Length: 589
Ligand SMILES: Cc1cc2nc3c(=O)[nH]c(=O)nc-3n(C[C@H](O)[C@H](O)[C@H](O)COP(=O)(O)OP(=O)(O)OC[C@H]3O[C@@H](n4cnc5c(N)ncnc54)[C@H](O)[C@@H]3O)c2cc1C
Image (cartoon, rainbow, N blue to C red; front, side, top):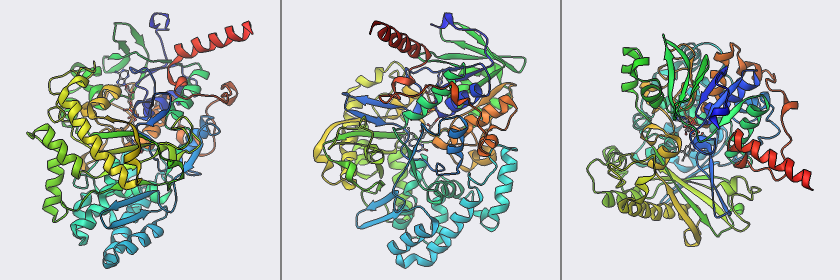
């Protein structure tokens, strides 16, 4: 297929995650001849869905999103790309989009800072004074860095951060403190500290690493503006972006790996595909993993010494694992909330024991895999989510009377712990390791118990279960260390210290979770818009936030009633084949 491909493009985008796809859609809509290249058979990266037995659809990396309410940045982008009538937003319960549940404890996390404070005070009445101070700080920081009120498109990350810092004022000194240290300094006991920080896992972080600022921005995104889910599931983004790209003259190549980004004299010249073909473009946007982009695609020869040192120091976020369950239980009728389940308080006796728990379960160097897996399965908190409940009309998710549940948590990458040391990941060789299968089984059983705490009775009604591991994440999205949230959001790698869009190589731009816009779905989408802005010399986000359309809606197809977003995510060649088949069938009939 690639030998029929034009070899000259205005822009080539490497990797079809949310950052790469949004970038390619904006570039194509803005009139650039754009090529989007993806290794996998479908586009989407972490946001893709997968199906089993024609009955179940599992959402991998889109469970809920902040910043998607009316007037916020992501809906503005969808409107500007002509996708607002295709990507609809479903709100999780505003009275409790998250529920934190542990033995003898439960509280809801509602939309609205005052409601959140009330909920916490009702749960921990003894701590009222401390909670008022804690929430005052978090709210002050969160509102200062609120994405919906920041001019996201303009100025440097440094300028934006310093504008926001001025708004945050007296609370700014807390910004870089680790969340756990701040909670401890407020005087919370270890059990309350664990309950107030368990949501940090949704940013692929522990409270020991996550700066207060990032925890506050996370709360602002969700508590400040509510929690949202795209109707039809995470794959709708891929289908929508593909529609814009292809209707505006762009091409999507799947099953194709970029082996090198060609750099000459400090400027990007194009890419070389695995197999040898070279394609030229004055702009290359990399939406793939940041370390691999520099180390493998650009290579040491294309980097200055200082860049190479920066790349060496980059630390990726802790991987997430996801257990996928299909159950015979009518979850469409359950509460529309996610659950953060803390299985026991055994490790919350002191700050030291909490720290030890993190070390024991997430950095378990030298432990025997089965022994580690049993400890992990018994003690690791997990986040339980149900796509069938979030979008009850999506019949692809599960048949009536059934549901799919995703149970997710942080986990170590360490191949030794998964029983796959020395086995190849990209070929899938690791999947046959007996130890790997045994470790997975133990964790699936443990995570079924977390699911049971969220949906009583469900663990007795499991039809199918599987576990996505850090190795699976690496195989499907080609990320270093199986990370799903890009660079770890620690104080050295957030705000102005996180990579921006431009690189030291002229014409090479970055998009995705590791950029200053990230991590997560919203940040990745915005990063792509920003990369396209730099490439086109326009402030596309500002244009779209002011109600401007950059795409031409009239070029886009109507979607049929049986529209399948996964089918539409297989690239341009597959789409042409389907269209030709459709024409042939209608000629015959
Ligand atoms: C289990 C899980 C749950 C999550 N839940 C949420 C959530 O509820 N809310 C939220 O906001 N975020 C969530 N996230 C995070 C979010 O999904 C990701 O941060 C985001 O999707 C990352 O997008 P990205 O643009 O960085 O690209 P990625 O998703 O990392 O995709 C990069 C793509 O580039 C391709 N690629 C890489 N290198 C090459 C190459 N050389 N040639 C061709 N193609 C290449 C890869 O195959 C991949 O498809 C979750 C993630 C996971 C894994």
